[in-house]
Image (cartoon, each protein chain N blue to C red):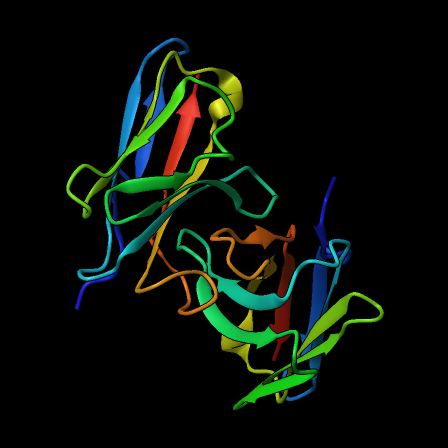
Length: 112
Length: 115
């Protein structure tokens, strides 16, 4: 039972355009959400997070949107840069539970 | 200022062998996590330590898997009698407080291949 789903295994975007990565979850108890970025042969690195009391969080070129009624979150990257090419993981947790549940990842490729 | 360090980077084991994977967390980080990442999948939670106490081991797939952190710093994940389905990347992560208070810092992982 996949509680966090990233339905797009891959995404290709032109440099300078907006990249939108999507994530759906099924567990209504999740109240904290994160995005991690992973380069080959490296561990995931934290990008941005959002608590369920908010519907948007912005950090530079990265913005995460949360739609609780739809159990959906998205990561917007604008403008996209070649260094953004990586695998992006969405993750979720329940307040007080010290574990993250990850999606399967989306491979983002930024084309020059 | 080093990050989370894991060793070895790669491990090949014959089916039935025991393996031990090491994790050196960031100094001062109280929380330590182990995750298993199969090919093409996201990381899956295995176990969690706060200092030396193992507070959650619900993700360990079988009693062949054992983790310890005896002095609240370095941790070892041990897999006994390895099976082919144990082949995966094993990721260690640490954080200053916990999942919702500070982000996890991951190591580069140990890729285990069981032949």
